[in-house]
Amino acid sequence: MGYKIDEYLRQDKLPHIWCPGCGHGTIMGNLIRGIDKAKIDPDKTVVVSGIGCSGRASGYMNFDTLHTTHGRAIAFATGIKLANPELNVIVITGDGDGTAIGGNHLIHGARRNIDLTVVLMNNHIYGMTSGQFSPMTPTGDNATTAPYGNIDQNFDLADLTKASGASFIARGTAYNTRQLIEIFAEGLLHTGFSFIEAISQCPVNYGRRNGLSSAVDMLKCQRDSSVNIRKWDSLSKEEKKGKFPTGVLYKEDKREYTEMYQEIIDSVQEEAK
Amino acid sequence: MSKKGKVKITHPERCKGCEICVMYCPTDILVVKKGQITITDIDNCVGCYNCELSCPDFVLEVVENNER
Ligand code: SF4
Ligand code: SF4
Ligand code: SF4
Image (cartoon, rainbow over all chains, first blue to last red; front, top):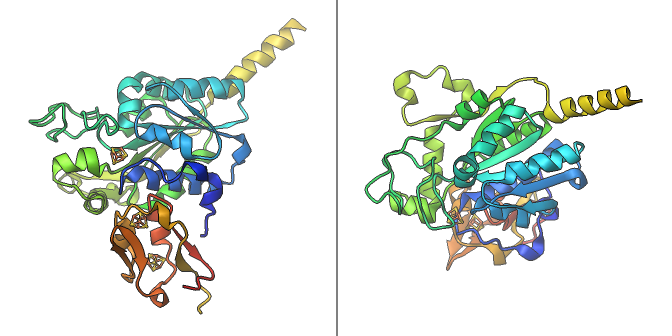
């Protein structure tokens, strides 16, 4: 064990702005431990984020970073990766940023199977703007824009990204820190579009409106509703109710976008000789 | 002192008193007092890293030699 996390954090930017008990800090910390575990070169690693509470992460992580416009982190990251395919490009987004305003970029990034590692911090709400419902706010839950309960259904992000073409799909929780480190490391080492949904807790703008105002209670809820994928298939339909699988949910060897692009460049240059 | 590491409050100024580490500690030696994390009995720390990995604010670290 013994990860030297401080080296990877911009010390002058701490303490961070996230509220007491917010899961984003835990997820960011364990993403850094995953980077350390995967032994990828920090000088060849770029972190790109969008807008929202999750978007703040790029300001704290001591790498080359880019804080972009709302929903567009995957588009910026695609440009970085195409121009410099040797870089490890990590996208940090949230459920509002990544599945609402940036939902189209998510499905098209997955469709191209471009070699990005996309970490979606899912806190089930628009936290930064004080609690509007997002596509990931559970049906029936309250938000400032759904004071009588949200009637929208959610995406299953693992199903969505799989149908779109992603070649690595995983899910973890802020509760299970050791599993998070493992799946981040594996996702970072995978070549292709790696999508990792990290369930986070927003005690301030989601929990408080939904009977869970303490971070500790929200973490216990994550613990009680998550089931390791290794056990998931043995559960009955009844037992799966209200629960979700975690771990590496899907993995496939598949041709990667920038490699295919390089092949085109090489063949055209060869013809021109 | 045992060979295993012990917890250390390396960045007390970052603690937000959320009690997440308290929930994870298997030997109940972490207590929030007046919004700040404190260690009640360092001898009972088993060096499991639970607190270090879960703290959202990077306050705690398991180190080999904690004099406290
Ligand atoms: S509003 Fe919610 S998600 Fe945003 S920092 Fe606060 S607790 Fe975290
Ligand atoms: S390392 Fe383990 S035993 Fe020691 S304080 Fe942290 S959680 Fe408790
Ligand atoms: S988890 Fe971190 S911020 Fe929260 S009480 Fe413990 S040391 Fe303080």
